[in-house]
Image 1 (cartoon, one colour):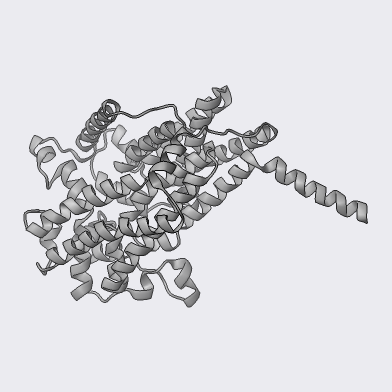
Image 2 (cartoon, rainbow, N blue to C red):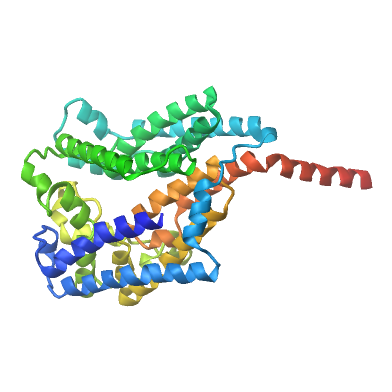
Length: 431
């Protein structure tokens, strides 16, 4: 979790591109929309503070809780996986199967309530207006967004990981069947809108699940093979989805896949600083989660959408402009300026470190592994979104509650049930 955050979300996706922007050699279309050149340096300074203060905060929090990361991670890797207790087995399987059915139905519901499913249109050969269809799939969904986001998008891949670990550990037909159905559903829900990153992150979740369940030992040869396969798949997706065929587009640092990785996610951060320093007033309380400001009859405003409307209004008018998401510092600055940036770094670093320590010390079961893998992948993705998602994230809360219930069924249901029954019997005897 920590390595993916620091080396992918921060170093590769943010700092390298930030350095190119600070040096003025990015030649990137988004940065050309920036009005004040001094924010190239100011933005890079803030990113440098992030690279130093973030791990420093995590180190301090770890020391406060007596956490030795290398030793505890090594212990966690070699700890055996504990499947469901025999007394809980049937109840857990029944509950899991019911939840899996709900998630699979949620995926079908999502596809049915989406007017034009981009992945199906692509397979039918309809490659016109794919960009608009992708926006429509996300913003023009006609169903209940909670069913789609929680049970379809979030829960289905997690349940597939649980079934996968159980299939590896028990080799039972039930778990293999459940995994197959959930795997197909997960692939559909991660690719239906033609977003390229979700399918890669799902594959990484499967790999991490194998590592944590001790069925896969990574080495440089295997890692290199995964990287080559991922690169080939990414190139194929760019050719099929965006029609990119020129070799120069794949090799240039400011276009194609490379530009997407090192510049596309960090450029809006510099635009945030520029725009909210001059053109738009700071959001202040309006930038906080709707769960919090709803008590004060205020409506949440996401800076990413405001940036798209301000910087690329022509795309919004054409229906191809969604949001300009960037590293969480962008929304932090849009909310409370430079103070918000420093406070957000310390707060988010502490929250992530606490989550990491908690998983390292929980009993290692398929449910816990799946939730750990989910946060390992989704926290880095959420970092490129907004700081308000770390203040209150309804999808994380609901997912955790559901899986906590599964964890109780998996390990402690009969113990709790016996305890409650003993209390009831004692009251009856006294009566």
